[in-house]
Amino acid sequence: MIKGLAITPPVLGRISIGRVVEKNGIRLPQKDNQFTITSQIQEKDGWVLHPLDEELRKDAPNNKLRTIPVRMLFNEADLNLRAEYTMFDRKSGRPMCVGNGDACKRLTQSGVQSLPCPGPTLCEFGKGGLCKPYGRLNVKIGDDNDLGTFIFRTTGYNSIRTLAARLSYYQAVSGGLLAYMPLELKLRGKSTTQSRRTPIFYVDLVIKEGVSLQEAVAEAKETANKVAEEGIDQAALDAAAAKGFGNALFEYDEDEMTEVVEEFYPAAPVERSTDSSVVASKFRKNLESQHSVAG
Image: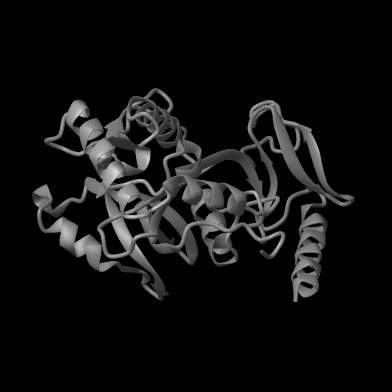
């Protein structure tokens, strides 16, 4: 396995609740009140819709896609949703500091250091909105690809907090059979003082409509026994995923770096007053040397 490269679930497409639009020559994120499922192909007008988007939208009220039937790929909640406090270099889009509120790994001119993580509100390095919670949720939609997933990326506290809670709860009540639970992503809205009473939307994870929690757990147990008899080793899959995620200091995708800057740092300056550009340049050189050594 190539060291320094995070081995993440194969991605077939993206799930979003907004898009990036161009206004006066500036590309800005625009929130929406529905899901959009796109492929991995991007054209000048934006991301190309995945066929599943049209298929699921046919049965959606008013053609608004606000629920998506999904299953998890792993039984371990934290493998399906990876969430950390993250500071990105605004020019390259690469992560420069990743922490969990207790400890962090930070890219410095002397290399990657392990340091205390006080969280984004108390951290001098990431103050001013530079450090944000960053979550990546991988889910399965449909049965056409056993290990292929669709990814939902977010810096929203509401989505991350809700998804993390639901995943851990469903893992617990199912006896560790999260991958077999019939679930669906559900878009919810709320108003807060911070949003000035304007509705904001976040993503929730619930039992598939029409199925009770007891029925979902029974179905999960039945399905787990069936696939085990067919020779599928779910525990080994979880172990392989954990090893793959831990194969790199930071989890990131070279192809998505520009999107990270556009979506999460709108109208951001290209350089900080600190030496982040120097650090990012050294990080790139380190990665290049790792790949060249690996052959």
